[in-house]
Image (tube, rainbow, N blue to C red; front, side, top):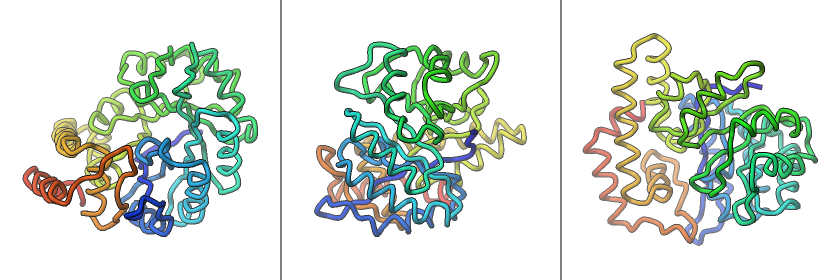
Length: 302
């Protein structure tokens, strides 16, 4: 399996009381489908996965399963958890709700010691759905699990049923290059750093998962089109805009800030759940003004 194009790491919509607003999912799917996104990554980091209960995550799989394909979107279910029974329950739910693939980050309390231990863990996680394509979600900055990913992909092809690749949110570009230049079967490497997408394209990553694809997919589609046509200067110029956008949002606490931007573009995903602290009304005003000052509403949305 190979996934290409922009895969939005979707927000989990919340009501003001921090309950999950499942009724918002159809609006998210319609917006993303019209924006030219090719898929959705559900209950990952941007989706506040570890701030949700397992039942909430399963209910989100059900909600996205009803609308993703209707809007031309591939559906990737993130099933990572710190305990095996809950992770396996989400694997079953992913299959039942028509997910095209599943993904999981490493457990982050009792941490696997090495690539072999992580493979053993994932082999158990995917057991309820051995034929569903599986992506390792490599995000050491959040999990604190730093392994040799090159070694992992070699072991995973033998040990993990359905293994097809990695959602690579790892800053080690040399390692990524080495994996993509491996002799034999090369895994599908989904690039996971929005503000450096052009680096991923240069390394021959054809799919990318990111949070800013929720509200600025047209910008990234232009980057991809310019790269494919050999217009590297234009691609670099638009990539610099992406980096400035990410820096601007990050000043306000990234995930709550990104959810505020979703409301600005017409799909209100509500607040971020504690322990993330939501933006104050004045901070939302300030963020919108900062985005206007860099031209975001002119170049990011269309």
